[in-house]
Amino acid sequence: MSEEFLKLLSASQRTLDEGFSHLPPNPAPSLGEAASAILQRVAERLHDNYPYAHPLYAGQMLKPPHPIARAAYSLAMSINPNNHALDGGRASSAMEVEAVAAVAKMFDWPQHLGHLSSGGTFANLEALWVAGQLVPGKAIAASDQAHYTHSRISTVLGLPFVTVPSDATGRMDLTALEHLLATENIGTVVVTLGTTAIGSVDPLDQILALRKKFSFRIHVDAAYGGYFTLAANLSPKTRSAFDAIPHADSIVIDPHKHGLQPYGCGCILFRDPAVGRFYKHDSPYTYFSSKDLHLGEISLECSRAGASAVALWATQQLLPYTPGGAFAQGLESGRNAALNLYERLTKSAHFVTPSAPPQLDIVFWTPSASTPDASSALAEAIFDETAKNDLHLALAQLPTRFFSRDKWENLAISDQKSTVTCLRSVLMKPEHLLWLDHIWQRLYAAAVKVSTVNTSIEPA
Figure 1 (cartoon, rainbow, N blue to C red):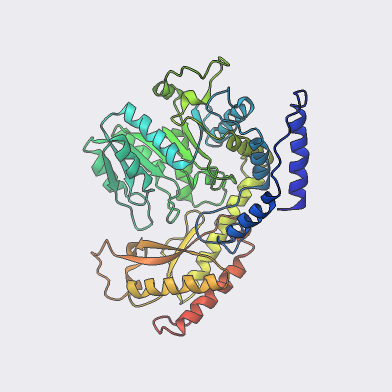
Figure 2: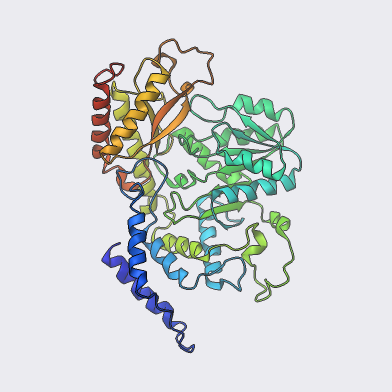
């Protein structure tokens, strides 16, 4: 934590404290002599983590919050507001309304109903709950690459769930979807803009076109990829999907992913504010301090951290959601890093890459070998070897159909369920582009070392 950060936080804390200086003194209790030793132990225990904030951590989708988000969150925690009702967080509730409006504006939704949540899972729960109220008993459909939470949520809500096959690029198969819609049993289609496994983007624009023939709701799960609507370097197909967002019925985005926020901070938006009627409920002891809207009146969650809203609002003031701005440039940098890494992998004989480049900022590949099982074993060996050299990647079990059939010997064309263990990298930090040479050097060195004891990998 930098000295500048601590100075800014200290100065802001004094300003906050001055706002309550007219009250009788009520000094905070001393932490006591044991506090220092305890916090030292906490710091030592926290060493047992991967270095998530460092660019050499290029594994799972873990991105450090921006310093201003950390500072604003810490500042708000001295009050610990609860954004369920205005009684528990007047200022933070107002900041949440403004922050959510900024997210809606990013998606070109001037009219909306929405709020922050504890994360994407609960935000998706609310979206599918509302869908179940509007089209009761009808099934939820989502791609086989969609997040597993949709199947679980559907079970919780008592709604049927149907899986739609994906194509070789991980996007929802439109022909399969149309056949399902023809049954008239589908009430809501979940369209994923940025799957958490490979960052694939379902063709929202083409799915919207199917509403000319069939009646169904469209919920966009953009928990991971939503902010890429600001990026100027998407492929035409991906751009078309994002440009269609204004015509969806609901959307989820996670500011605690690309939005530079601490966990947990999700966001749910509905295009039609009238769905607020489904939230209506009575409370015998809240909602009386003001006739203005209390956020608990449009949320399934009750207590919610007001500090999350404060942190998001502060970050938006520093880094507004404008195309070409600093925030958008950070997203573009991550995508450029993914494209750069994909190009290096494709040119190397050590690795097998999918035929299509990354759709967002997630790259996956597997070592070159004679069979998927051999590639899988090598992937695990390289994963361990890179970690020894402080490069941390991730592993993922993915369908072999994401790769060309000629990559392995004797792989049956009909074997649609065959999988292979892949190495996977989420290059979501803006600085990943600057560190790509370091990442590649460590990855390549690990592959060379592993290949010396396994002849199934030919030198690059």
